Image (cartoon, rainbow, N blue to C red; front, side, top):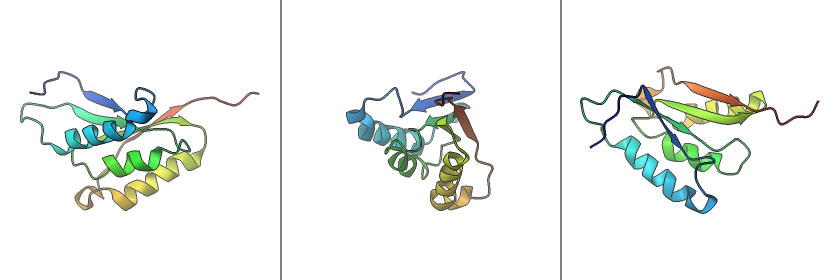
Length: 116
């Protein structure tokens, strides 16, 4: 049985998962986010996807956006505004219709990979 006193549980598909295990991780996370939690469970679920441009981000978003228990998305290594726009467009296209008009939090994890 799933229990937690946390405000939010972050499920990681990015750096915490080996390349060859990402499809299996997406499947497990999708199943978890599609299963109704116990009525006493109040934690939110966020998923840390792979960075935009990694080649994994589309599969990540396609796996999690249809899930009814997804509460937020963490976008790592955000260097440009179009990284956020990319995810925002995916939400517009693939989020569940009943959640379309809800505020959907995106947490941006900035990294400075530029040399000055």
